[in-house]
Length: 311
Image (cartoon, helix red, strand yellow):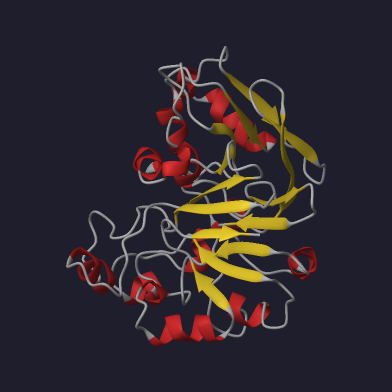
């Protein structure tokens, strides 16, 4: 058996091209430039047996992502309804992590695994009550504790998961005018570590404000790491004229610079390094850009919708 990974979406919130953005990247994507692939909002699908799949985050683009992924289509059989989605794991409470759950409300049985702060968000917001508890079971993930993933029938999926804290920010809809120190919360974002029975290890960290020594230690000798690729430089959105926030204000470490993720991971022993959750202003979305070439020269892949990896 192998560990299969499919990128359902690779972009940051809003997708790419973003519906209301006229930056140069979005302009090229809308024109069908082959060097600038459109991307939906970040999510992965992972399977240890090729039959039952686990989603890592459920983006607002989930319906389109499922239509584009034959592995996730309903299988032939006697039942008129059914799909190979066995579980969803959530790494944060932002809209681009959880909104897709609302598209899984049609009586399909699956498990949701989430850290306590995300579990609270889902249970405190009445709209998520459309996920009928007769079909959907919620499981809290305790930080630092390994959990075996199960399907709705209680059968093991051949995968384990552990959450760990990463520097991050509370969801945008919870900010309510707070100052930056109040927005940064060690409990607001988690990284996910998954592994199969053969010990192959995958990390999924689509949001991270700073690369710490602890993160570098965790990633050492990993088979694959999907990491926050939101912005190339901290003031990118300001320079592009499409926003007023820096990457630090949004809780995302930049790729470039002395404190950027490219420099931080330069000596890390990781089999596959992939940037995901890429903002529409980031020049690495353009395959022909110098920034994309620099990323590839440093041993990184740039995720795109439909990308498949087998470990």
